[in-house]
Length: 492
Picture 1 (cartoon, helix red, strand yellow):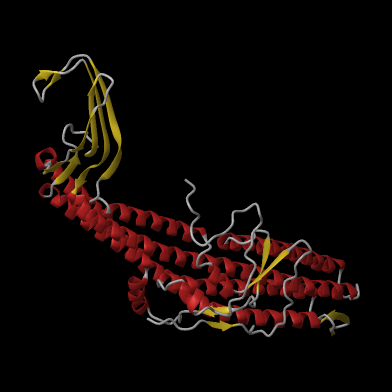
Picture 2: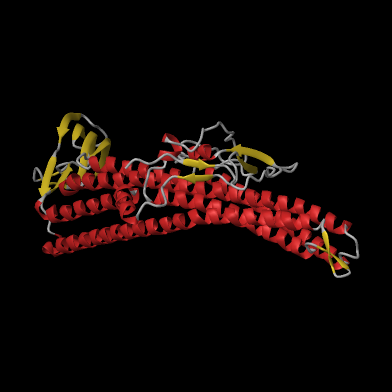
């Protein structure tokens, strides 16, 4: 099923113009947008490299399985010096007191199981197919981790921006309360406002800390410079919609059960187990072929040059060929062992089928969880936006109300009391936190649903990215290993 294009709701509904979160002198800025981060997630994360390495192993195992028909080639020689008498059973006479024996050449040697040579390549092919599906699963997981880390950066930078805005308004509020007449405002009200401002400043410091922490998480996933403080180029209130929240579960479930690469991987392993059962059923009826030399069971040279002579001489030279091919049908423990091997493989197949069923249940639950989060986050974004609007209006009203007074009998009182303005500013900070947190939760829930449906990672990383991919510096410090394309080569 075609995936609808991603949409970006980047306009802050409140119309509030927030200043971007500032950097400090020691910060190493790393500007990046979502499309670029998703593109980097296609190959750089280690989970992708690990899956690719597993596929290499499976490819090697398939190659070895295809070569089970081919015996081992030996090249070498055999030299024997015999001193003293001894019988020559071939001639029925005693040999000379001393004999030199030399045999040099090459030969094929081995025990070929025709059962394994037929069925192991079939099973190994299915295992390789499973590893290829695992690579796609790893890329999907890497994209989900990248999106989750990226929106956590967005969330905490937004919290930092909102905290700084509230700190700025807190300074204005403290200054205004301080300028009021002591007849209108007791000293305790000034201290209350200053205490509130100190708390806001601590929250701002904590928000900056989390911005840096989440930046480290993102650079770890993408294997970038760990010292970087990530600067997302989108607004912190950007909303990304990949899947319509209104789509029903009965429509989403079949998509996931068809697309998820984890299910395809488990299905391939079930097929591999089926071939293993067929192999054990056929094993008593297919022979093992023993290839070796003729004279002894361990003769590994079959053709070459043969030399013989008495004492220290080798004066009789001749070509020699010794071939022995033995087809043997084997019944393990008179056939009872073969039945046990069949039962064992049927048990392995049952485990593979159970694993497939468990994965199907996991996929169905993933869809339900992801849709629940998306459908919950969508209205909460609107609710958080309304709460932020109300909080801004409430604070501005209380802040301006400190300029006006009214008479209560013969007493001059403020229209709005300072504690009301202090409380309104605290609610404004809460509204900022809820707004940026809810927007980030909506974005993460969208990517979680995208991941649960099993759409390939390159759908949004390469084919239809949510924005223009921009060049970024992917170099890392010299004390960290370089990032290549795929797993590092084996050193030994």
